[in-house]
Length: 318
Image (cartoon, rainbow, N blue to C red; front, side):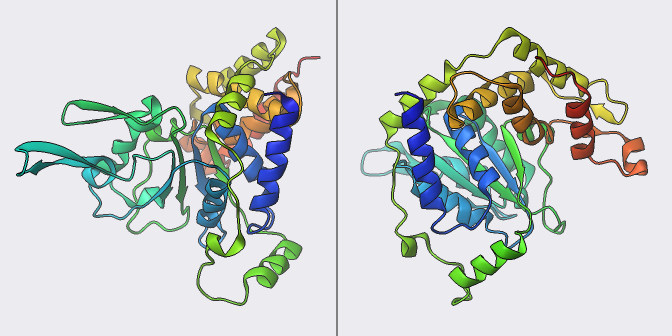
């Protein structure tokens, strides 16, 4: 495995996703970076912006098992994890596995389920294993959660707690397309009112398990110079000193930023990290790890604005 192989896989995956998704190149890049460094992704956007469809297209490019959970307010942890059922023929309890036993999990509308059910994902996302009736089951190193949520609808939703948000490597904001992109969407999909199916577009699985493991191993060895380690640490520590941020990012954020920067460098065809790699991942990596102060709400400053100010104000290593 080398950089050229990773670059070729990246190009092929983008071409396959481009069969069904118009635009969203930056989001696809960051999802690929998350895949390379073993992270999870939260997609936030208004209804109808293609979040679910993009995840389905992304998963279809990977020769990995794909599962989907449509979260609802009445869902219980057992609906996610599974449960032990008594088998009268053998007089033993047998585990009926829930949908979490997969490799790529789409957690659709994750904020529609209560905190108790959201918490069922915590161990899986952090340790890649689940515990059911005091028995631990491994989910595998390839386990990845891509969750979606709607930012504007409040009725029947449950905001994700900070501990849950911190498990996501990136929080990506899926915005409206440009006019040209929206015309292309209408041209490609405007002949039907229902959501299109991935099976209609011949999206092929391109990444085998052994290739993914090799790419991850290579990415972990991407060179991160000492001055760039200082830069990562300075960015994270600056979130704790900003006057409009009540709670800054944790040391875990610095580790994740270093890992994500390596992955972004690999996608860019380099075996070393440059400051622009760090800058590119900083906003989506930090935006869900800070809590703004009451004063910021009064003055109308958003978290993204505060993070951009930190990025602009932190000296870049030469």
